[in-house]
Length: 530
Image 1 (spheres, rainbow, N blue to C red):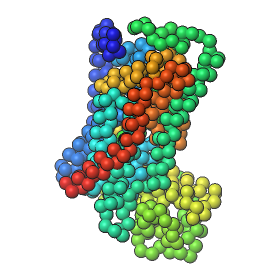
Image 2 (image 1 turned 180 degrees about the vertical axis):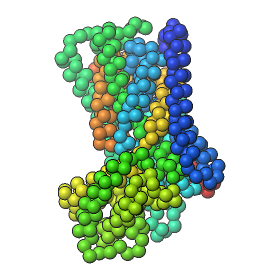
Image 3 (image 1 turned 90 degrees about the vertical axis):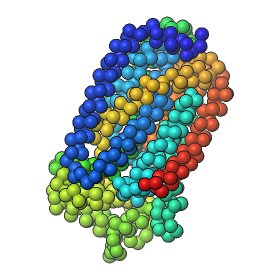
């Protein structure tokens, strides 16, 4: 009997519980959607209505962004449930609901560091003008390119990295934006310093998964002398309770870690969409307590003193915003960088002090204040890594505290956005889990996946994702887990199915260039259409 028919038989036998789970899922999803809808309505109802077009674009963009998260669920979250479904530790419906719940918790507790780390890869002028035609073209192009590639690889049953596809899409938009600009315009393309760091984490994670999972399996064999742990599933019989508990625990950890890392990628783009369409509501964190204003002013005073000392007698020539933006675009330190940044920081302090609270800044001023804060934050980030700036450890500490205060004002994610992202991830998993589960359980190694192999791969995936999340780095759940399974197969002497490994490697190699080409072409098309 084929793997697919085994799953079908298992589901048929559990039809009663499947209907019950279906009703529970429907109720929970409905509550989540209604909550998000009410929160969104309350947020935008206070914004001045100029025309219906921004809200139409908002609706379309949100649907596309959530479509990307569903594709993420097809691939990455399906990997999280693969071992518990394949080993019959949980029925498919229960596994998906369980994984979805902990994805949800992971999303809710996420810091947003990964989300805004992804956004920082985009051209600075498109971020500052995200509500423009080019800004919408950017968002639509990179999301649609990632969706097209993710859906295609999922349809073929090839575990592919949604993170990889999204990074490629962002690079494609940046390159297209730069190529389309006039010579000497100063238009930026890709922040290669940031992009290289992200790509390194994506490239390192598969090797990390392969080696660590193999070592963990061998170490387990040396310490734990229980033959049942190293056997493949037999028929529809669930494993012993303690093995079952271990596999459910690892599934839970991977699901939570996935939500806290991968779930953030779509949230950052949704925030860009909201800032572009309803800037008066989402450009600044109006929920920030007024008590934080005093903290901001204190950190601002210390940071301004550092910049003033570095600037010396130099003064900003022309608009300080243009000087800071030029530094962000060109990544070239010059004598006007410190004076321009100092003038910009002083202007930000005056704006905040004048109104005493972010919620009291007038609607027609919010966009400018947000852009000024974003420019200052990104400039501080680059200066801390720029040897030419010659900043001491104490200087970096003061500037880092100031940057954190700026980011608290501009880099935030409303709870309803997290709820919608978690729902989209869960729906994607429910729809697309079977193709990826079959590949992970049956087609990577020549022998079927054993309990110990599944647990080793998931423990490594969980630990690696948590570590990356702590550093604000995006990693691929798919790459870590599938390479972990391959590592356990190699360590066990089971052998690998090279046809599957070639497909995985091909998808891994082609994802970046394919996503770059797709998003670059779509961006060019949309710029001319909008």
